[in-house]
Figure (tube, rainbow, N blue to C red):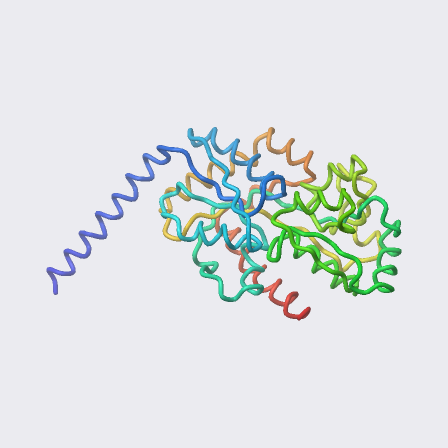
Length: 321
């Protein structure tokens, strides 16, 4: 028994030393960052901004891989099954990394399948309409939707996406019934709203604000407690008369479970340096997105957000069944 114990401890020590050696050399080649949606949406834009800056700290490029499908679950299944060596990471949000477990209880992964790295952005949800929609403000829209239950259609980035949750939160707060149309990402949904194929979109300010500024779609409301600097004319939910509509979200980076702590620490340090850089802060400002505060950047904070939002969206989604 003693011999076996000694052998086991020796093997454990060898694995530990190997992990430390790996972390010291890490990264020796490019890193893949999986984005769970098509190019052009909120998660994609934020991923590219953060990845470019993180690469400077890590000394290796970070290659973005857009893996759309199943509201982000296709991508996170792939990320969960990847080697836990730090060379595959993923960006997630409250939809893909929390609400998904209620939407699809048979997922092949769980929150414990991932090691949190860091929160990298705080986002704000907006409802925007095609520019010729007959309602001119939120109250007119709610009245129109109540007179025409199920006839108004709003696009989102797929069931399980954060944009889907913006739609569900809005529908619930307003007490209306609308038809939700899922796409493979925020960009194709917005394209159809601009073209008039759908009545509007639920989207993050990061991907829809420019279209609102260019008057390609008409902003209806932002689910925030304060107005956005880049869209100062867009009313908050309280100002528009719908205080229960809250749509402040987040994006975070994850690695497969079992990724060495020292590697997570290196990725976290690179993420911290990225979101604290002037370049990322300026880009986030232009995208109506906010960088996390310094006390929100530890990996455990992201883990706590996931736990909180799993419970939060379980309640919201089960109430609507």
